[in-house]
Length: 381
Ligand SMILES: [Zn+2]
Image (cartoon, rainbow, N blue to C red; front, top):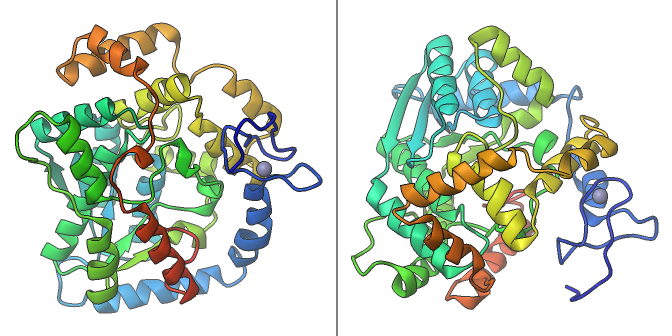
């Protein structure tokens, strides 16, 4: 990592030195583009046996689920990736998924409506886990006080924890994810608030320093529990079937709309009102990190957007200024803060997870081992 390096932007995508670890080759192409060409493309087998692979996976999951209420579980947010994964699981793979939606208090009406339409249209079972709002709220405020960029970890922890809880409860071995190369091949750098998993030590330290004094009433499943106990010992498997079908963002949106009346969002992650505010306001303005830079770069390298379109779109936020200032007030009040209190938190010194107790190095070490023995490929979270 270089400090105070001169500004540089990739000549192929739009990733730039706002990722402090980015590297460029002599042609000015970044390591995300190089990784796409050298590691992702050669393993991305659409139209070259992917149909067979999808059907083999489907029959294995169906076989493991014999005699059970469900053969797999899908966490559904109402956004495109998880919605399309549910659609593929049911219609193309012939699976019997349990859909789990976690309501952490920030659902947009559109997300709720999309989930209802999919559940009705696909005739699937849905469990909605409503997380204790007071617990989420006080943990989110503690995180804001910590000053770190990773402000979506609290919702992520709520989602992951509920998903694994249901999987265990119903004896489900297979987890279907919406993760995919097509819209996510350029991963959001860790520095931009993309901490590598649910780290209970980090949560505990932030809570001890900034929590409101009550015991933690927020249940979370630590990365060690879900990686090692659930996945390795209990044998739960994660699958990303969207990598085995043709998955073009615009086509997938149109298909879900035509078939089920599902409605597309203005941008990725806009199904949660907090995440939309966090990614469109908090993160770019407080830290200078634009997650859209990674989202658009994925679409550029996969031929779904031009570099010029992406650069123009980055010039302003997705939502207009008046809307964002209303959202600032909404978020403050929902978290039990005044707008002035939230503004003060916006202005506190910038921190990173390194300022708190964490086990990031053990997680990184574990990821390396899993990769070296072939248990993990591209994703680790
Ligand atoms: Zn690039």
